[in-house]
Image 1 (cartoon, one colour):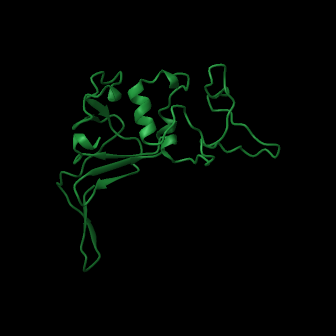
Image 2: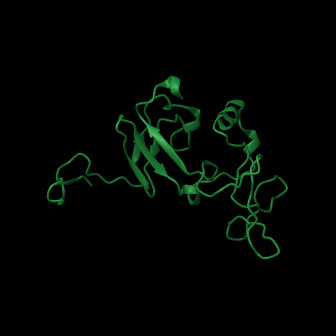
Image 3: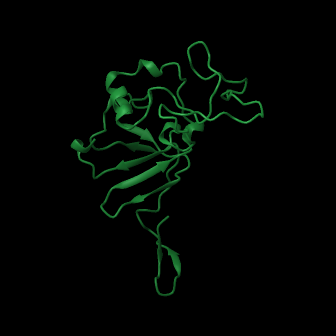
Length: 173
């Protein structure tokens, strides 16, 4: 919804007939553009060519920066999308390099230690939830990275991403 504010009166009103008044749902089809469009990393069953995606679930925050890049964030989509954990080491060399570049491991990091199955993937209970390990007091045991730093919920290892859309040159990727 497009709104404007009168800075003097501090009155806010809807700008009717604005191109910004639109509804985007999880089913809204969107086209990828720019250097990433068509990448195999964007390929899905919905768009094998990696040229389209669908909308947003919770649309936690978005907008244009002063320099014209559009940013969109979605930090809580782990409940909607996740990997099984059993294919983490099947990544290509390029994927492993990309993860290392941004300080991410090739394994799925969780904020707390968890039980593992025979493939090293997180064990899940009958409801499909990860079974976390607890100490003698019943508290969850924090997971740490290779440097001994605790892994926190909301980091990129928990799929909390901020994405820049537009105004990015291919050499910057």
